[in-house]
Amino acid sequence: MLYIWNIEKIIKSTLQEHNLDIDFVSNNNLTAPMSYNVSTNTINFHYLQVNGYMSKIRIKETDEDFVKIILYHEIGYYLTFKKHKHDLKTLMYGEEEEIANLKSIIETNAWEYGRTLVPEQLLESYDKVREEDGMLIRGL
Image (cartoon, rainbow, N blue to C red; front, side, top):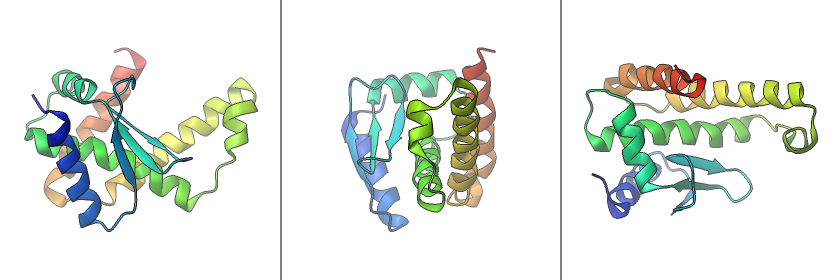
């Protein structure tokens, strides 16, 4: 089991390695393992959710590398919002179909942009997590 300080260390070293100025904080109210908040430029994580997610997605990686993989996806959101000035008003006030379409674009971009930072030896696992995450979301 990974504890808060383990995850903080992984996040801090990964962000430093890529010279990214993103804050991070533990958030025990989070319903996902990690999330990126564009308004505060912060990655939030919930260590129990991270551990639960690791038990749902079976890949042959160390706990540290697994955390890096989900972190790269969250960094992908940072890169997405940095490269594309999405109209956040659409997410807040748009029509249902409009919101769903924009969320889909943002999610796809987050996975793709996050992948650009993944070390070669983790690419296969990153792609597998992406595939399994999609199945979890669809309830398969």
